[in-house]
Amino acid sequence: MGLFWKVSEKNGKISFFIHKKSSSDNTPMDKNSSTTGMKITLGTTYYENPDYLYRFIKLYKDKVDEIIIVDDYSTKFKLETLFEPEPSVKLYKVTKDYGFNSHGSRNLIMNQAKNDWVCLIDVDREFYNEGEDILKIYEKELSKEVLYKFSAHFLQYGRYLHKSVNDFLIHKELFYKVGGYDEECIGYRTGDRQLFEQISNFARIEALTDINLILTRPATKTKKNLAENPPKRSLLNKFEETFRKRELHPEKDKKTLTFDWEQIF
Image (cartoon, rainbow, N blue to C red):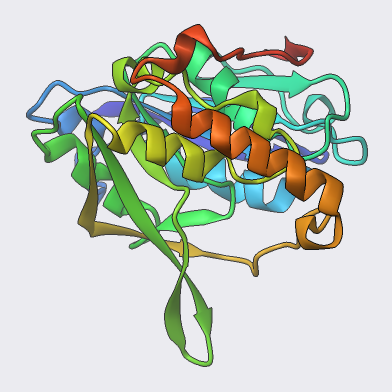
């Protein structure tokens, strides 16, 4: 007989408790079945979408070693009003409205993760087979000098179409070799591309082709369209030129966690 976490929803809140599991339970392989000794932190950002977050935690709470969630300044559906404390799940909140701050929030996830391997995906991503495909990571021999990307697809007209490229697995050492996400990109939604370009200068980027995700909702529009805002487009071009000139270890030039944040629990 073993123990595992279960989720209970009561009075609009989600809570966690220990459940006894009998030997007759037909449960799939879990993270403790790993033959590599790998431990994984799964991180995501949150903004006014509690239904997706409930689903996210239900899918992955038993499948990874740690979950970190960063609320990018929600005001309508606040994490502190939806969740009760649980040590295995860390919740953080950006305390000011900086616009689109997913990249800064991901820097916070990396900064607070207790494990060397961190999987960053959006809150509306679902690994195939009800999330079970994430367990395949535990069986792989991976290099800390490689960024491993997943492909996320969304269902349209009865077939899955490629949509997202910002879901990946990375070792913290590699992430910090390039200084993480550059927070000058806050509000511009280009941080992933810049991060990948910097890493590709001296490390490899590989696709884990047997591990895929489903994008469970349509893509949302950016808060401000750069094409319709020439001054900001020009400013972004300036950033991109700066990125291209940086050396292989741009952490010397880069500032991270430049925003205000707090830990909820």
